[in-house]
Amino acid sequence: MNNPSIVILDFGSQYTQLIARRIREQNVYSVVLPCTASLQQIEQANPVGIILSGGPSSVYDTDAPPTDARLLALGKPILGICYGLQFITHHLGGKVRSAARREYGHAEVEIIAQTPLFEGLAQRQHVWMSHGDEALELPPGFSLTAKTSNAVAGIMDEARRIWAVQFHPEVHHTRQGTELLRNFLFRICKVAPDWTPEHFIQTTVEQIRQQVGDKGHAICALSGGVDSSVAAVLVHRAMGDRLTCVFVDNGVLRKNEFQKVQDNLRGKLKLNLVAVDARERFLSLLAGITDPETKRKIIGREFIAVFDDEAHRIAKLSGSVDWLVQGTLYPDVIESSSVKGPSQTIKSHHNVGGLPETMKLKLIEPLRDLFKDEVRRIGRDLGMPEDILQRQPFPGPGLAVRILGEVTPERVALLQSADEIVVEEIKAAGLYQQIWQSFAVLLPVQSVGVMGDQRTYAATCAIRAVHSEDGMTADWVPLPYEVLKKISSRIVNEVRGINRVVYDITSKPPGTIEWE
Ligand code: XMP
Image (cartoon, rainbow, N blue to C red; front, side, top):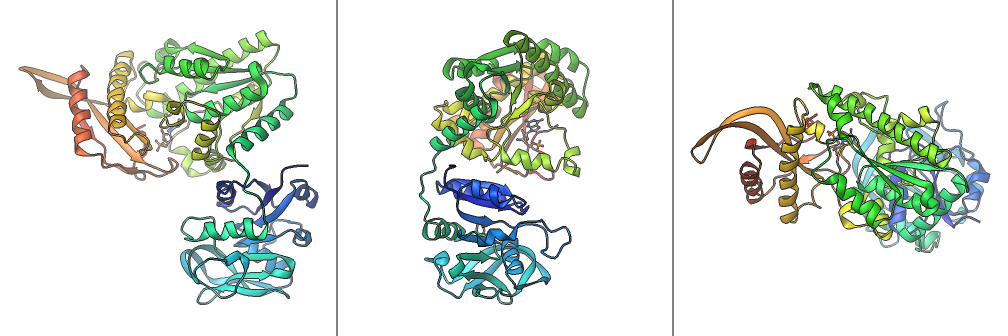
């Protein structure tokens, strides 16, 4: 029998995984199933409660999701959210209509009934709404529990153990949303808060073992960052040395990173690691190239070529390679699901996406449902070093997208030295973990300076520091003047070849985080 879980039926809302995350934060196990799941699949997940998510459809749409409404009669406590409320209303005999105007954003809600779902909540609630339809008539047996000035905001039928709200308790703008979800979990479903990172590790390792069986070999491309490292450690627990990790020096890593990553992953985490020095391959292809997209494409393509060579070599040694481990996170899943949208053309992000097709590899993605901070929590429980867990994101094409103009070994060395100073000073100021990314960019601009009595004519570097939640949007950080002063003076004095430092004060949008 599976672990007792809260089943979240996904009707397609952008917030569904946020519901799952809020529940995990309460140390409760949850499973997200598509809204087309059969009753049997739902029951297999051993639900102690079911949440119906929001979604973009209208219950009257001809292509409204074909969900089996008999789930409402399973006898499990149910919480409908947004579309979930309309689904319940529609299928149990009430009426839903298209609202005169779409409600989107902050709203005030008044709680008008006592129910365990609202226990301890203030009568006036500040909430987040996002819907086009609204409930007009409640189904038989239901009563109104909350309202806005002109619409239904909450309903219930306690006898059938069904509750629903029109607003989104999972979004942090709903100020007491977490309390509401806690009430559902602990007062209504009476579930135990015993789901911990340790549980996640155990069940994930077990699932991977079942997925891969006792034969076959897996490979994983490591970047030295938190996601691929945590994914590799989890798979290593399940498969041991049937997993080979590959770490490629593409010539545009940070200073000493090739060695540091090997020390951490092979030395401390005991991963079966192949480190490939492919600097020459990459740098010779990059010679003479200045166009940002061409650089990205070259690095992406060459990475796949190098990795492919390694994979074939490993396949020869170990009989076969069947699996590819990737540290895909939930935000990456969302981002790539909009791959067809216009945002994709801004920059071609580099990954090992081409491999599964060429080598017919099956994917293992143990972190697909998680957010970055959850991955860090898991990593901590796995005993991973803090310098991996806290490392700021670093792009696949590395320093190449921070070297404007041609990427040459000399310019890479210049930027590595400047970058090292930025990281050291940001760390010394205690800011490294508060900032999403902080780094130096080498510009193709020479300017005149004076050092001692000597005229200089040398390169300019820009400093960039941004706050961000997920890399999709970002604000530039007003670094303290003292920190900027120290960085600037150290770079100009210690890095021969840079004589001017400027500060980038552009947010995203309109800028991007990386300069290329
Ligand atoms: P931009 O520059 O698009 O970057 O605002 C957003 C975030 O993505 C990182 N980034 C990449 N990460 N491969 C990656 O793995 C890439 O090709 C890539 N390009 C940008 C960037 O560092 C920032 O965190």
